Length: 451
Image (cartoon, rainbow, N blue to C red):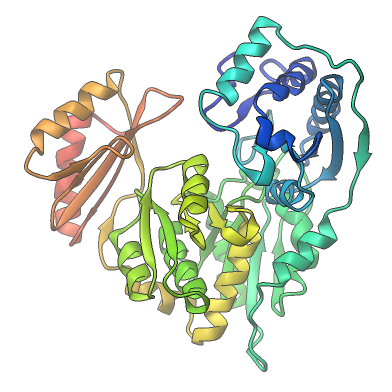
């Protein structure tokens, strides 16, 4: 099956890797990943899809597979991935599946799975088990097929999101450019228009061929049009959604991208203003400034490994209020501990209104250190390389929460293996640009040329 069963979802080229026939089998395998606690919510599964031309036929066959195995399907149609999570949580269903390949190019498609309460399907009893059942053909049919119904979830979702808006009376009308990248963020327009902002929409036509640029806001080249529009319009803020609108990246009024780790700190601080003393999560690739800022804002910072299943589980376990990842996922307790990019937009607007500062002024105090982006190295013996790093830096504070993290007083780095590719990924931060460059070059010598 071409390795389409990934750590957190199913993702592959259509139709050679993921097609209608395989989607139907995957639908029939979903019965094996739901436990008694999920089943206690009944027998319903939410299904939705993105705007790709092949998402509708894949969704149709997925639904057929689900009903053949006895599930009652609630089809909510075109939706963002966070809307799927919201439907699973608010309708209290046994689980949910979103048909999307997120930020991948047009020829890809995929499936994202949830259990009750929008909990991720993960671990050995999750996607690997589904892969095993599909491969073996162990896909039993129910004695009686389930039913198919439709539901309209957008209005309830809109009301929920707008409930977090804290726009002070008489606040200035912020001008905001939003780049939907022809993806599912397009359907958020009615919500954006109710935020009390002057909305400047960019690429708000649903088009799964992504005619303007790839729907991946982590690549700086995909923010160029947004930054240019912010400058041309004299806007206060720019926002870029990915393909299924579960991630967002922000640029300031000067058109400069703001690191998603720093955005996590700003949103965490805003929510801590309403609920002090709570836990706020960040992934271990984040700047040291994030934990420092959370503490300064009266919160308890929690460092977590990369991956939505870990972030969501720890947020629930700690009764945390919020968490964020360097990849632009923002997790909210009040959205079933799931990612909700549009709520991140709302909270950033709240920060701008409450402080009266510009986005660049808000970010400036967080730019305390010099940090690399994530750098990839093609490495066959990933564990061997990490062991060599542990030996080289044996006098450092070292932990293995996710790959290897090496910490000194004036610099730190994390090197972690990719789940799906022969890559090691490096993030490094130091107290000065000179120290960062020196340590980066030192690590490149040990890891090989970046790819």
